[in-house]
Length: 221
Ligand SMILES: C[S@@+](CC[C@H](N)C(=O)[O-])C[C@H]1O[C@@H](n2cnc3c(N)ncnc32)[C@H](O)[C@@H]1O
Image 1: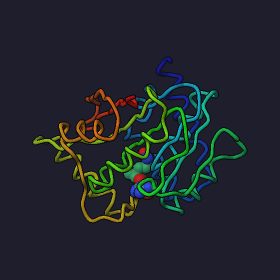
Image 2: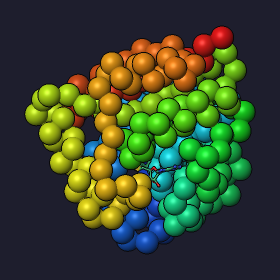
Image 3: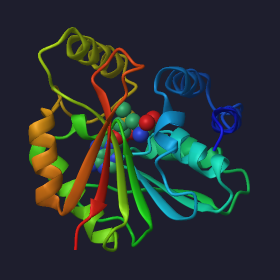
Image 4: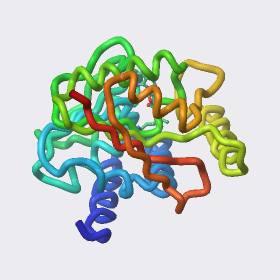
């Protein structure tokens, strides 16, 4: 899909927040500007039922729905307040919905693909693996799990990644209920995906100054 169409989807997604409270709107604009969600969207199947775990205010779920009319999208988050805002963006689109649920405790429904964007670092490593196992339970063999995450590394990029999350959580935009973050090394992340039942490739997001990567995982037999 041409890049212009993907960024068009991002613009349309942001537009759905025009009547939400100012703080949420500012946050969503910040995410749209800083997170390169259009880059991640390209790896998501264009058809079928997609579940976005830890959807927050629902921006990426909105991008998925706007970028392809053949997708049905369910966004799931543990934060009722954010789901309230996400629901306010639906505005009569039956292909998009949002639910409150804990991705650690409850597997998502059977679906064609699962996405997880900037969520795992908030969870202890055992909980991250539980979320991945839950995603595996929802997917048939060969179906994809697309995860945007950040890797621990000895580098200025990682220092910046950590500092930015400290600011975001400190401002109250992200509530993981934890006082620290859990960034795995690449080696540990790949081992975790394998144990959870996935074969995985890594795409580095080098355009960004952080240690962001996209894990392209496929459910193993
Ligand atoms: C940094 S935000 C990212 C939100 C969204 N994916 C995005 O890209 O804008 C992390 C989100 O993970 C959610 N979260 C944390 N723990 C969760 C859990 N156990 N189950 C579901 N969502 C969770 C938080 O409530 C928060 O909305």
